[in-house]
Length: 281
Image (cartoon, rainbow, N blue to C red; front, side):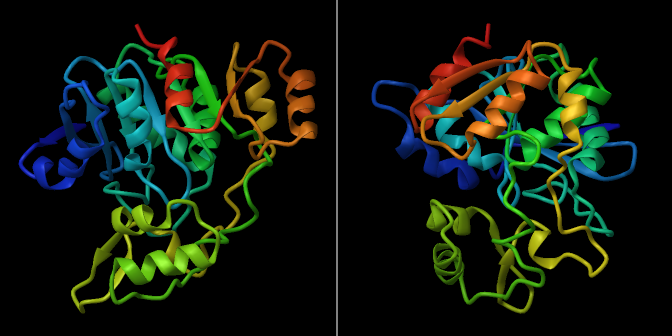
């Protein structure tokens, strides 16, 4: 296992964050690192502040570590947001298999390198399901499991936003329009962060979901993770008022995971950051 740190490109990649820092708060130190895991693949992470990470955060399908920017700005605590395999600056897999259970080993290895000491692992969407899988299989690598607006069986079916193959684009603006037509939130920023320019001049998704091989699994949900979730001590579900989780899913959580804690917050990055702050020390 090897670890690489890069700060030379930080001003370019993270320069926009300066304008987003809340008034009166100093700009955080943000840097990107990679770890090469046993398979030879690498996993990328975005580190906030210079002290050991008090939280590990995992994003949803089609996003990257940068999806947590607003939450981490509001939180203002040491943390690391990881790029899931096949997303952001992490390696793509030739077979295109990004199901939650298949991500557990790579993420656990990255967490042991990036954030030893069993910090809480916070996940949303696909990242939440991957967090269940890694916490159940590698409990020594992760602290408390925190799920944000996600339970097994609640992901949107298939890859609605990222049909494969997805088209190429003339630029990020065209990609943003493509996402907006499909109802994606914050389409402009997502397109800017999650596209890259190919050698032929076209712009394509930085993640692999829009260019999966024909044999790749397209269903990323895994309702069978309920059994693993039930075996994890005291998981925390943070749900947003009027958010995506329905009453049936919440009732099932109460029955199958009776020691789970549920916290309801208002929409927005600040409310989520406030909820996560109590997990840091």
